[in-house]
Length: 469
Image (cartoon, rainbow, N blue to C red; front, side, top):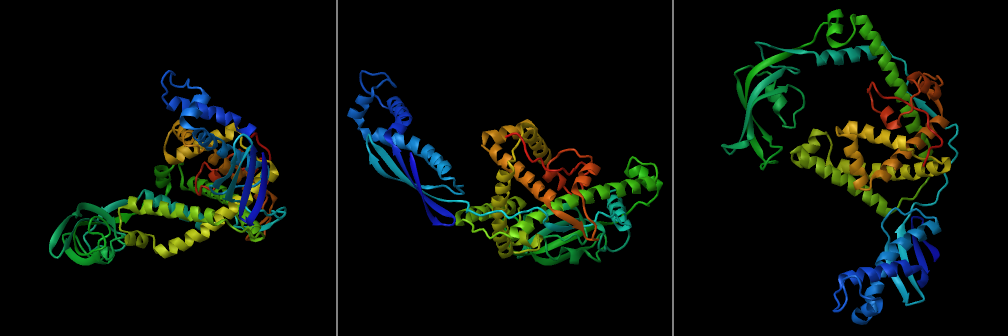
């Protein structure tokens, strides 16, 4: 087989592949067997029709077509390897010549990862947040803990922001009650920011037993987007009461006997989380600094596929929310146009990141061990709330294990970047990532686990330069 490469653009090539007929023999033998199974010829059992009879009865073109259907995708893969190109799209393949018994020729146009060099990343300077834990940090965690153990107490006054009300709601359009737009005994925190515009304003100042109506746009159901009268009837008003910060609270909210012990534990965990965050920031900022040094043209098809995938996920989220499209974007305080602009920007960065990390993976000869793949599956299964063996089977059945391994080695490449960087914190102190690995306890876990903010089980790790493939 002979392959010629023509560069159509920095991100697209045309491969011209010439293949001697001898190299088609395995595919041709398979084609005869397949056709023999499909045809019925008197005097011959299914699958036992000789090749010459098949050609006489049905023509050699049938066999050649089946041969090419089997051979060309495999030959294309070989041609890609020979040409040392990295496809990022499906190829446009055309068989341009069939010289029966001699050779065939086909062309394949495909978008590829452009050629570029990764600059030296040793000593890239990055700044990360300080790991110093302040009293405010501890108090913020204590306040969050108090919120979890707050109680609701009924009050004989009008509702204010932060209070909880129990209410009945219903909606009318032109005086007609909309059955699907009604709910009873709904508990709601005033000021929480309902997608039902006007609800918070209406509730403030209402007392138990009062009824009020206001006009708004419905956000879900068959009448989504239509203006309606919403009638709310407040059944009760309750205020949130936070527990006192004392030893009794410490015993209620933790395994500690005293408030001081609880504070010390919170301070220790906060420092641990900040150290982990320093590792994650170092890796991401080193990657950002490296990306700024490289100008990489992006294949249009890859960019379009990435943007389309994000738009598809967005459509799924909107459908799952049960909200109208306008209400969905209002809930997240954005617009569809802003999200689409964000998709374009983030998609371009994601593709560029993948190209760069893949280069580092190859240069550093990074690989994935069986244990690392197992750890990845177990961790993802825990996040998704499924059994690890179920997720492993799903990945295997859907040919996604390769994608999982790509994610693992790209995380390793990020670790390489972080470890190679010169890191200081916002106070000007040098940050030694290897010392952080030791303090955290040095257990080798994945970078994405380290990125889980606030997870007491998260760890940071040094990159493993070599791993079993």
